[in-house]
Length: 374
Image (cartoon, rainbow, N blue to C red; front, side, top):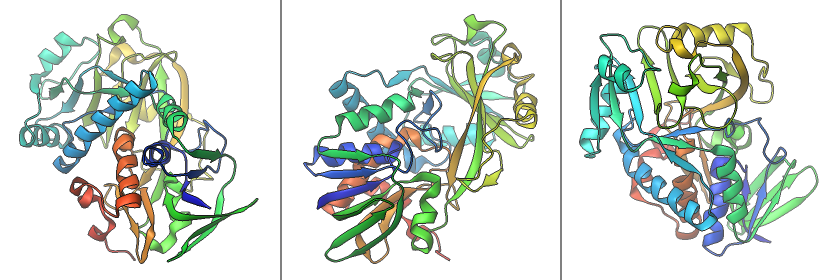
């Protein structure tokens, strides 16, 4: 019998395994697909990390802890996981991204600066904001390497046995423990942690608010002037294309050929195991319509592209809680396209819920009770 079974070994599940192992627990990790698969939400070379959080100021204390936990993981493993580039939140001053980021920065006394469109273009010639746009510059922003982060969590997780290509079919829990069934075996443990991304509603059903899958397409484009897209020449950025129905975001060149850029939220809802993983001409047009005049030096040929999944909660804020009436079953889901940066602290929160029965008050606003479960 295991101490804990963790279902799903992506960003949140791998972090939970690492944190549970730090507490001396024996963990069985069950992953539906092969190691390093590209069928979820945790692939694609880079993920943004930032502190001036436009989504809500309540995330900032968790982000501070996330930065600390990433630093600890780097120190313990010797791996290079997080690169600080600085970050730009670009748009009209009253728009969601700029105004929200400024609210978080001012409330939490974060180092930041507001730049005019002219100042942005002077500092970063790859970017061409409109004259009525500004940018909130935050020096603490940067990017994480998702594949390497997950591999490191799992490699450093003490007491872990990971089993791949073994999807969970059913589970049950009572006061004596939990039982999990796969196609090949039945497992028992004291606790269950469920972190299976866009597929979480299929496993938890009406126990939690609905989590829906959304198709997201990532592009790597060939820049006309590669020198202005290198680390040190370009920070991460999030651009509020106000009036055009989409945000987009991007990175300096990391390692893979081309420079990564993507739309944030496509509106293409899907079944996670039936999503169209081919990238089509309309996907490319949707992106180019947003970046053509804003980043003319990046409007080159597509070098490569990938499809991943967003796992959206009803209000696009995370869901981290216990299953109702099942105190030994906890879950994390609904990360809605902005969760990876939090993986290091989400794992800690889940491990604390398992071992202590409670976690940091900073995560209370993410409990499911804020939503009506239908």
